[in-house]
Structures are given as C-alpha cells and as structure tokens.
Length: 284
Image (cartoon, rainbow, N blue to C red; front, top):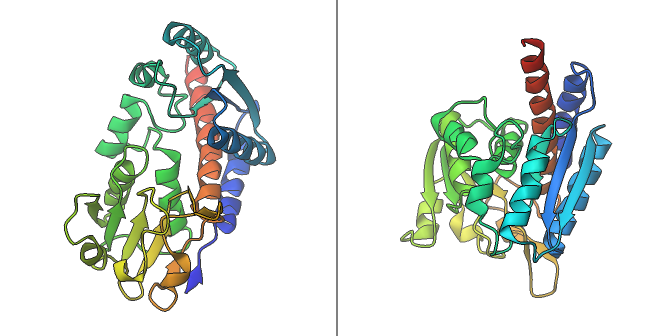
C-alpha cells in the first residue's frame, strides 16, 4: 500500500503560490479571526500562520474574548471585512453560542472568504462556478488525488460524511471532475457494503478509526480527512490506517496527510483573492 503524504502535494501548491506572487504588486495578507482559547483553534492558527509565512505571505491574527457579545463581534468583524489591506479572511469555527454564525457567513465579503463559508461561494461550488472559493479541506482532497495522478473521471467515489464543511462540498467538487459520487452518513444502511463499491473512499465522519478494511474494496484509494484523538491521546484519523495494508492500493496518513494540504490550499486561495482584487482595481 502506498502512503500518500501531504508534503509532496504542499510543495507543488507552494510552487503555484510563488508563481502567483510574481504577478502581484504587493504581498497578500490573511487575517485569521479567533474567538476564545479553544486549543484546536489555537493549533490550527499556529499551523496556518507557519505555513503561509513559509510561502512568503503575510498573516495577522485577531483574537477576541470567548464571551464577546454578538453585537460587539459583528462590529469588529465588519471592520476587518471592510479593511482594504486585508486580502483574505479565515474565521475559526464554531463560534461561541452567543454569536449568530449564520449572520457572519452572510456578512463576509465573498471575495475575501477563503474557506468558502459565504452563501455566495457555497452556491458557486454547488453550481460548478469555479470563480468562487471552495472550503479548503474539500479542495485539498481533490488536490491530493489529482496531484498523485489518481484519475477521477468515471470513477465511483464514496464520501462518508455530509457536513457543509467537507462532505457536501467535496461531493460537488468530485462531481465536477466527472466522478460518480455516493454520499454516505450515519443513517446509510449497510455502510461497509456501500463503501466497498467505491474505487475511492473518503472518510470525513469525525469518528476515530471507524473505517477499517471491511469498508474498503480491493485496491481502492482511501483519503482520511478525520482529525481525532484516540484513547491514548494520540492524533488519529477516521481510518484504521494499519488495517488497510493488503486491501487498499493507497491511503493518506493522519497526521501527515490532508491536513497540511489544507493550509497550502488556503495559501493558494489568498494569492487568488489578491490577484482578483488587483485585476478589479486595474479595470476601474
């Protein structure tokens, strides 16, 4: 079984980012918005900052107290949204319960919405309009497959998970690549049997080591999007990676797989957002 590591894909995306920077007259800036001190959010923020900085991009963090009111946060968010020096925004979610997250999704400028949370960008993903931004993790899965020369057209793909963060937008991106997609979830009858029909299996269900060899067709490719902590406190995915040996032809590990590609996609989105802004300004 081939281990599909994210580092090689990230390196290819970095080359694209560097070429994109040559077409710009300034260094693009990302603003990461974090509310509260959630350890997962802090970890992702550090990882994204390190990756984008290493790609030659500018990153700033705006951190607000976890008990900030809905009204106060919207006021702060509106200011960031309107700031001409900000080329892209990444808002770490979920937000605290007192903040209406749907309102923020509607407020965000679609041209700065690098992680595809705006209804405008979501609609573009579902309609096949490539001018919008797809959620970074969903796009990272497609990059992982295409940059490892895994054909998608005509292939049967099972996506285990139906969230708007990964499962649903990923299914749309795969459809746009002419794959035949089955969306699976907690209510899917005979789930292992359904998954075994797939040439490519993508797990984004959020349950540690749920997917073992009984879910996998012989020589299928398995992409693990899950990030969980096992009973020993170790980071693991939704897939029992070791159990796939002898069944899957290739699979992604956790850590070291899709996660690093996600932040590289974020970097590519930032450069594209800046380029679109530059084009818009030049046409005024």
